[in-house]
Image (cartoon, rainbow, N blue to C red; front, top):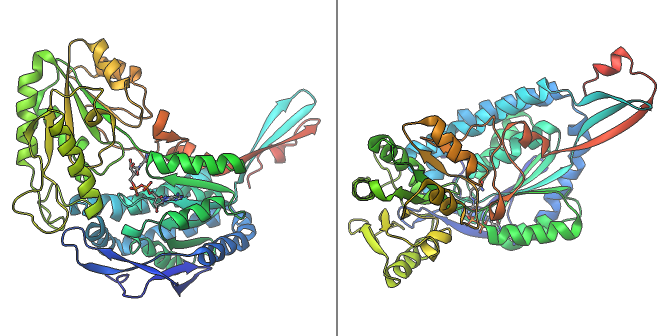
Length: 488
Ligand code: NAD
């Protein structure tokens, strides 16, 4: 794995530089040292923003077809490194390797290819008839982007931001989490190899102070953040004061609504992924399972069997379903919720602690609480681990009310033999995304949350628009034929 190195680095202005301060990156399954990640200080943030600012004029003026060609080369370079990248990510954060192959290996390249196609196929200017003549409505790159990502899907979530921002003609400072500081440098290596002009992409890592400096930096034109709701609120406040555009992809506590006619096997097979994906460290996790009283006993038995039967262990093994959590802190946080649930009298039918055969690393057994009150902390707060709360309901109306009785609104699913009926329930759920009988992100469709789950959308054409600023140029008289075809 080429980026594992004992000297921490940042990538600024097209060059790798030794970092002035560093933090250890530990392997989630063993707690052993993987390498040193940068803990970028103020001067390094300033240098990265300055490099992005210096590169902006050239990159934004580069024709979309040329930008797209560079993005496609970047995708090729990422694919060439994908095996080592997905292994590295799995070591850093414990993601099961089967998932990592797609999420950290193939997905970032696919997203770059998607936005390369979108930017070449979408005119930058559109002519609209107006009272005095016509208006040119023009999409311009928003400028220098500060992109801050969490550790749970480090490559995919970085690509959510880099791909549309670079396609739009923006330049970027990517700030990775300390836990996944090493894999972020793969983007830098690939960018160098692909011939991305110096300064168009800059990669740093660090904690809250590094992120906060980037958010408020005068040289940043737009902030794109994925992470917790608590930090998202702080960033929104800073951007509000600065009147700086911001996209926020935040936490969730999504509900799986199982309808009376749901097929048991389909539902349980689907929930294996929807409710436990990435060891529960997934923002759109279906961590509340709403079950009709008439099906309650069967579903509880099946969910307990599912959780108890999951293969917990080495995340690098293909057969592993659930790996370790990212850090000792995250494991302790999840165990704290489990203990609090027990202390409140909630009933456990699977898991409930550290697996006896996994004393090293930061493992937590897949855990299922039943008869959970939707008002309790177990049902209202994002645990971010393999912990489910099963909640009974009497009527579909009540199920929708329970699903919506949450601070969050990011994901969710509806399970039924009747897809139309399930879709009607999906329409009634207040959430940015809902799956019917499965939950798979679609890179061509907008992804994001309502309420405390965030502001704005990523992916799809909406994700590109998030990096564009719109200008109207009012003109007297009719548009010429040439203008009406104008493409930047
Ligand atoms: P976090 O909010 O602690 O950190 C996220 C990033 O923000 C990290 O890079 C961190 O270093 C940085 N940061 C921390 N404090 C900051 C500050 N004051 N200013 C600027 N940057 C700061 O979140 P986490 O624990 O790394 O990730 C888990 C959270 O991310 C969960 O809540 C999860 O739901 C959320 N998440 C959301 C989505 C989504 O698309 N909605 C996707 C994945 C994860």
